[in-house]
Structures are given as structure tokens and as C-alpha cells.
Length: 394
Image (cartoon, rainbow, N blue to C red; front, side, top):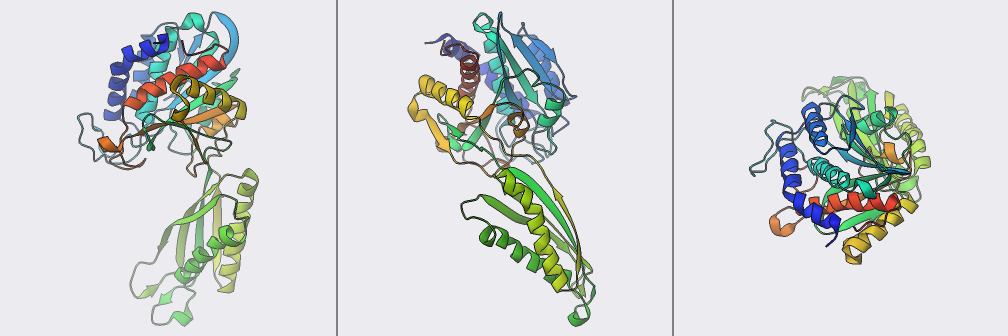
């Protein structure tokens, strides 16, 4: 058995205990004060770390090796979601309406485990490892960009992020080649019509009828305006109008989501949406106001970093462990890191049908197989050593 493997086995229960603590006391984005304080105080017990608070609810720890070399950053997000938990295990959320329904409790515990392990291997480290405990991944504008602006990536060569993934069975890991997640943008639309009595529709400009046509025509962006090989999702997710059965209202409001992988195409979407809205509203004597909001950009895996990580996974766990995924159309503010330095984002399987761990992320019964935590800790450790120029697999 390797040194790393032995150290991980010795700390298994502690990592699980950390994860369960975070799960029991979840905090929403930009409110992770107790979580960050727990992380800070736990890191202090490891020794050999320079610990700072880049923002109010984030933590960074630096492990500086005894020889010069590269600087590798490892990232975990810490925030929870505004979801009421429906699980019934002992460590269920104690904060009503707040739940770790995306695995961030596991991410934080894994990075604490990696920090403890790597401080015990300081003599093997050439260069520096930074442990980034990030706040507010779930809520735009996100914590990653704030941490970048605070200087956490100054001098950093590569960043590694891990996301536990319940749709992937525990024991497997997956990496996307190129884009890993999509750009996540939103839009808001206000259609101004002319209200009146429902018995006299001819005397009105019905914003509900106009809005319905807008929704139908927006689907033409994907089906008739784009190369069918492009990945794009345009979804209207809100449609509000009216207050009574017998009244045609003045106004309808619509909101929606746009997911894209191609950055050039992403810039074109606001104009395409506005052109369609303008045409439909003008045809029916309505007017409109349109706002488009660019959100997180795509996480893009650097090929050279990805190849090192894939080689590490195969060497440590075997070729059957590694899966290649197509890009996901979900969003991730890890993109603020991958936009800044060459990075890689890895998915670690955490589902287990035999244990009933089958629910998707953001579901009130989401959970993880805690056996995945060991793999995440070791993946953080092995890949950082490889990227620093050590052989890893110690």
C-alpha cells in the first residue's frame, strides 16, 4: 500500500464526520460564516499552513514546499441551497429550508482531508499547493470571481476542481474534453399590450397571446437559426400575466434561461432573441422591454492538465475507473478559475443504486455514497503531486 493510501484510510472517519457536520449545518451563498470559521479553525490544527480569509466567507490555505516549483490550487465550494431536506438520516439539515443538495458538503470535507494529508507529505512537495475553500457557487455573480479578484490565483499555474456526481456510480470518475459545463445566461421580457374585458378581445392587444407566440418563435433559434451540431438550450421558465378570469391584462412578463458552449454563439443570442420579440410584438401592436444577463461562462478543461489527471487516475485506480463525458449543460462558477489559468474539473461518482442513492442534484432527497470521499481526497493529493512534478502514488 502507498503512503497516501494509508494516510487516507487513517483519516476516513474524520472526513466523513466533517462532511456530516457540514450537511447538518448548511449555509446559503454569501452566508457561509460558520462553515468558513469551522474550516479555518480545522486548518489551523494541521500545522505548516498559511491561512487567510480572501473574502468574508471564504478561506485560503497555502502549503509551501521546501523546494521551489509550480503553484497548484485545489478548489472546493461550500454553499448550500434553499431546499427543504426530505432525507431521514441522523445528520439531516438542522437549518429549515436549507440543504446541501449538490455535494458541496462532501467537496469541503474532501479538501480538508487533502490539506491534512498533504501537510504530512510536505517534504515531498516542490513548489506550493493552495487550498481554496470557496463561497457562493450557487448564486450569481458567484464566489469564484470574488476570490480571483482578491488575488488567490496570483502566481498559480493550475487549478483543480472536483464535483461529486450522483448520476455516476461510486468508483468511477469522469472528465470532459474541452468544455465541461455551459455558459449560463438569463433574460427578462416585459410585453406591453392593451387590456380590456375578455368579452371584447378585438378592443385589446392581448399580451398573453403575444407572449405565447414569442415563446413558440424562440424555439426557432435552436431549430432553424443554428447549425444542428451546436449545443444550445433556450428555455422560457416564467410567464406571468393577469389577475382575473374576465380581464385581458395590459402586461405579460416572461423570463428564461440560455445555455451554450460556443462563446461566439453566446454573444449572438441576445440579438437573436430581441429580433424575434421585436417582430412578434410589432405584428400585434404591442411593445416590449428586454434585458439579457450574462452569467457564468463555460468551464473549459485544459488539454495538458487533463492528460496528466487522466494518466493519474489510470495509474492509481485503473483504466476502467475513467469515463469520458460530453459537456454538461449545467453551469459552474469554477469557470472564473478556468478562464484565468489552465485548469481541469473532474466528476467523481457518488451514486449507488444498491444503497438508494439515486436522486439527482438539487433534489430534496439528494445524497452521496460516502465511499466517494476517499477517492476525492486521493485524487486531490495525487494530481497535485503529479502536476508539481512529483511521481505521485506514494
